[in-house]
Length: 210
Image 1 (cartoon, rainbow, N blue to C red):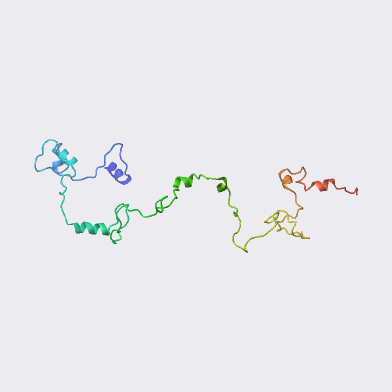
Image 2: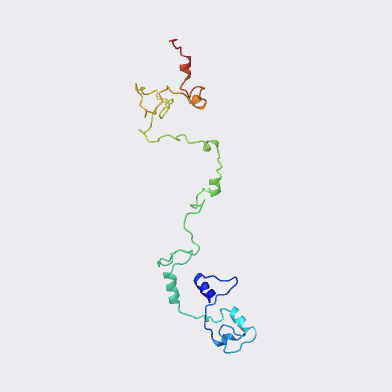
């Protein structure tokens, strides 16, 4: 009794112990030949039950012939899979096998254009002039809109600002280079005493003995 209470409160079961739910089983279950399930009223032949279990579509109804009106309405209302939706406008008045668009290389009966997609991908130039860039490439073709400038002119902002005067007192927020800063060589390979603020000009300048 103590073991039953401990099992109920702590759900502690022995190894391999089955759960006893204290069901009140009918008297028929006491027989060693009892099996659960519904018995057939008619005694089946040997193997007939397995055959009926494997034949799952044996009770389907036979095909019924119905009117075409319901099937036509279903075809119009429902959207078919992987096909264009029926807009209920009827079929196009075109012959069977008709394809829209212009046929490649035969736009007109008297056309001599036989260029195919392969010719566009693998361009075969008839002369060297055809593969050269156009003469007006990079030029404005509108009159009055052309930029006439010197050929040696360089656009953009220079790295060293020689085009503007250097201020007398330079601000700490001024990031411009006025030509008085060291170059990339000094930044990549600093001098021996650069950490002590001893730059090359200060090392070679004469100092008074006092």
